[in-house]
Length: 185
Image (tube, rainbow, N blue to C red; front, side, top):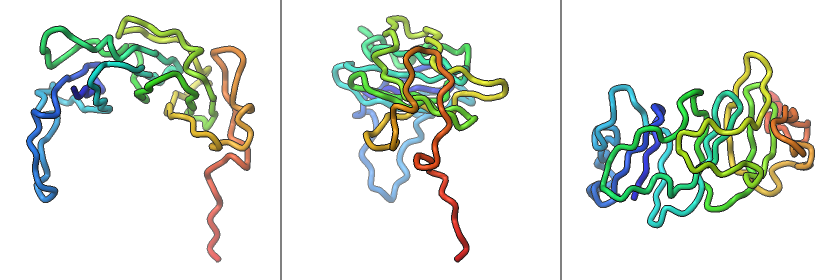
């Protein structure tokens, strides 16, 4: 099964076999039209699954995160559209599929980063949960992204970890910053 998560908090389910095999020169199918999405609705994330095992992690712009089991999206009948895929109280900034709990990096628009193990977040059985507050955000800022942490991404990862949630996060240090100064020479 293929699950397409949209920016309107809905999930469209389909099978990979419903898309025809084409050559690379053919542009293929337009996903929104093929699935019958609502006007102005865009697919923002896709998950391929056979057994509905794993975790969906949703990061919201208000600094909250929701951890929902993928099996919450399994249906007995062959429905194409599921409403209430996740909370629509705050716009979603990131969606990640995880096969097991691991560390992820929360990045705010202010540049602050927070390293959190998803085991610290409670698994919610309802899809439309608002989530738990993970990152404290200063006025005018929002949660920008949630990405999987790769070992060695930070020189001092303990600097970005916290004992309790929600936390403010830390600004990247000079050795961890990916913004390198380019020279003209």
